[in-house]
Image (cartoon, rainbow, N blue to C red; front, side, top):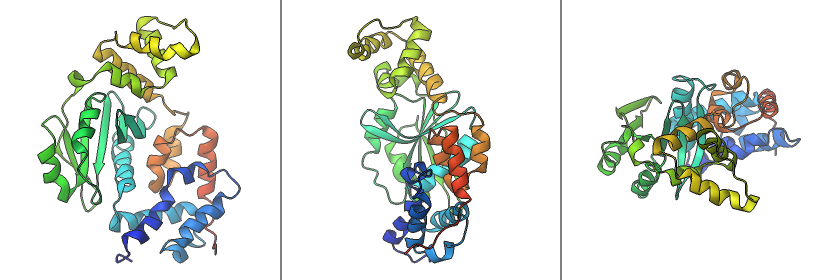
Length: 291
């Protein structure tokens, strides 16, 4: 079915929508997922399969014929956050808001690394402004593109930005490693990326500061205090906080049990232990024929 239209492939890609996975514990979930799978061009082939097997089958076809953003995200998460590091010590975050940009994938280990994806279907028009935003928050900045996009990216980015491409065999090939960007980071941009509990934790640990003000004033006084941190302190504090976002006991075991097509959602989903168990149970259910 390699001659399917982009519209057909988008029907297949609906199976990997984050919101659908998050709702796996509801009574109507199996019927809903089955309806999406069955309505795709491969639907009749998947009827009677385990849902996990059906999703892996559909994903393998997307890898071959429609390498949209999710395929890149899942490849990066699998090859870097799982195979190179460990899910227990590495945090992956999808669509991380940074100023006016939304980073495709952030991976936090000993430092912070951002991966901006430019697929065969993406425009490069906003790349300059995206990089400018990322330089205010992250240590390592990477652009991941397809082989045909290498020259376009190279003409836009400076020498500090890493350049990677996803080849036809789904291998990540590094053209250039990123350089450290710590000197360009600013504290205010980091502060705006953090949740209240996170910047309160950083200020308590580094400044022994706990705001003694009404709730509606906490943001303002904490922002003022946060700006007193050095860039290195602010960045390291962010790294420590992001590393524990969504961490649950046995995360590595959960990721290893997931279908390979869902690994990035498992890593970045901030799922509770109960949600993880429900998702694994749901993967064992059978695809229904829904008309």
